[in-house]
Image 1: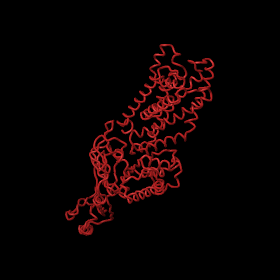
Image 2 (image 1 turned 90 degrees about the vertical axis):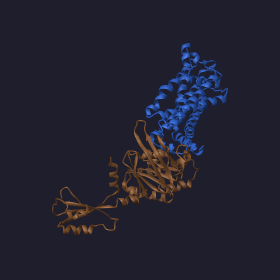
Image 3 (image 1 turned 120 degrees about the horizontal axis):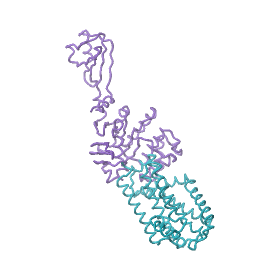
Image 4 (image 1 turned 180 degrees about the horizontal axis):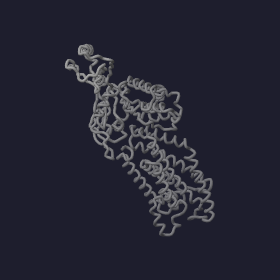
Length: 253
Length: 307
C-alpha cells in the first residue's frame, strides 16, 4: 500500500473542506435548524407523539440521515469530478497508486466530512429537543456505513458525470425525493397499507429505520433487515467502482 | 547506453474507431534528451499518456527501467515525472502545498529541503506561499515542472513545454532542461517548434499519423541536412544549361534567369570555384548569388507531407 499517497489525497480533500468551511458545515447546520423550526415546532405542535416519542425528537435521526446522504454524495462526487473537469486528474492517474488507494483517499475524506457533519447536526438537534441514544455503537455503525456507502455512490456519480448538470441530476431527482419519502419526517406505519408496501422498495427507508432504531428502539422494518440492506448497497457500490477502474470507464479512454 | 524506456508494437484505437497510434516501436536511452516532433494530432500526447499510465493501450507493451507499465505499474510510474501540455493546476492551493502534494502522491517521504531546491531552481521560491491562481502562465508552467520533479524522477516528460511561452521564458526553460540532464535525468520532450529540437535534443524522432517515421541522432540528421543550395541570378535569360556544365547537375529556374547548384559543405571540395570559372568560360554572366542551408524544418515538412 502507498500510504503516503492515501494520506496526501485525504489531507488534500480535507483541506478543501476547511477552505470552504462556510458552505461545508455552516449551511447544512442552518438548513437543519430550519427543518426543526418548520417540522418540529409547527407540525410537532399538532402531531405531539409518534410511537411514544415526541415528534421533535422523532425526526432527529431522519434529519441527520438526510444531511449525511446528500452531503456524502455531494462531497465525493465533486471531489472526483473537479480534478476531471480541471484536468488535474492526470497527476492522480500517472502516480504509482492503486485504484483502491485512490478510492480510500477520496471516499474516506468525503465520508469523514459527512460523519463530522452528522455529529454536528446531532449536537445542534440536542439544543432543540431532549435526546437519548439507546445504542450509541449501533448509531455510529449506521452513521459510518451510510456515509461510506453514499460517498462511494457519489464517487461513481462524479466519474460518470461529464457536465455540472449531470453532477446535480441524480442527487436532486433521485436521492432527495427518496430521502423525503423514506420516512425522514414520519413513520412508515403512519401511511395507508398500499403506500407502505410501495415505500418498502425505497432503500432509504431501511437506512433511516435502522438509524432511528439505534436511538429509540422503534423501527419501521426489522433492524437486521436494515443492516443487511445497508451492507448490500455498500457492496453494490464497491462492485461498480471496481468495474470502473478495471475498464478505465470515463477515466482512461 | 542502455535504454530506459522501451516501447514495442504499441497501438491505440479510441472508441470512435480513430487510430491514434499504430505499431510504435521506440527506445529511449538513459540520460538523453529525446525530442518527439510531429504536427498537431500526430499522436505525441497519446504516446506520452500511455507511457505515463493515463490512457490504456489497445495493443503492445511499454517497459520503464525494465518494469512493465501495467503489471509493475508502481515501480514504472515512480520513475516518471510528467508535465502535460495544458496548464492543469489547482487554483486555490499554494505553490508549496501543491508541490508537496505531488511528492506524497508518489509515495515519497516528506523532504522540505528537496522541495525548496526544486522551487529555487525554477525561480519559484519567493512565490511558494502564493495561491496558484495568482500566478502568470509562465509561472504556472514552472509550478507544473516543480510538481513533476518533486518526487525525484529519473525520467521527465515535457509535453510541449514552450507552447505559448515567450522567447525569454523559452530560453529559461531550455536552461532548466539542460541542468536536469546534467543531473542524470532522461528527458523526453514533444514539440512542434523545430528550433527547440535543434537546440536541445540528442536524438530526434518524427511521428505522423500515429507512426514513427524517423528516429535519428541529431548530429547525423543535421549532417544529412548539411546540404546547401547556391542560387545564381543570371544577367541574361538562358534557354538550356550548356553541355559543358552537365557535370554540375544545375537546375534552371522556370523563367530561365537563375540556376541552382546543390553542394555539400562537409565534402572536401564544394565545387563552387570551378563552377564559377566554367560559367565564365561558357559566357554566362552572373548578377547576384545567394546560398541557403536546408533546415530540420525542410526535412520535417517533406517527411510529413509525403503520402
